[in-house]
Amino acid sequence: MSAVDEAGEGAGRRLGETRAIWGVGYLAGALYAPLAVEAVGWELAVAGAAVLTLVAGIGPAVVAAPWRRTVAIEVGDVRIRLRDARLVLLLVIGAAQLAVSAGIQGVAGGLRIAELFPAGAGVLGVVIPATFIAGAFVLTQRVAQVVWQPFAGRFADRAIDATFFAAAIVVAAGVGALTLPLDAVTFVVAGGAAYFAGLNGAIVAELAVARLASSADRPRVLAAFHTAQDAGAAAGAFAGGALAALGTGVALGVGVALVVLTIPAWALARRAQARVTVAA
Image (cartoon, rainbow, N blue to C red):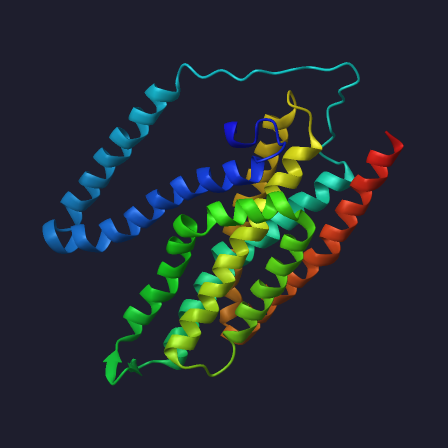
């Protein structure tokens, strides 16, 4: 919340840097799980994760406890309605983005790896098991969350519309490419490109939502946006598996369609915002 509290200049950069910190946690968890299980077994690995979650959560909370929001309520500030067309469109965009990047792409993409490389794949003369290819495929998302998000935030600050459109095109192309008979390296690169670009789109959408609301109203509006994102991620994960029963190409094709539909939705949301700004 503090990253976009003013939603003004530099808010995208702060948002990207904050999200990169979350990404460190995601990446650490992805590395911890297999290493801990192999080293000490499931029971101790789970117990260790619980302790780390408790300690790592309490420490930052204690440090941040003195922080208080400074809210400037100006005359004429109006709470944005959750059924406002601009917000509804952005909520739908946020849900669709995570339905693809956190759901369909991961689930259907993983199943697609099993289809393409049932016995593994040769990389530089070495046969790599399908499980390692799947691990590399998912790891690109975790690496992107750490490495790329600060840059994604800066792009959002400089050109919010261009960043959104470019991100949507790259995600659609990357997810669509996964339906092709690619070699293992190209498959991972295509998926990674979609993951990296997806982070651009997610940060841009959150920044746009933050700028819709006044400072006093922003926590409520951002909470609604994050809820929509989580709902989209959950629905996308289920849909990725369910649609893959008809074929991984079908599931990934639906993902591409969802991303493409966010483009006119974004254009409509921005057009509506421009009308409100001019009227004000």
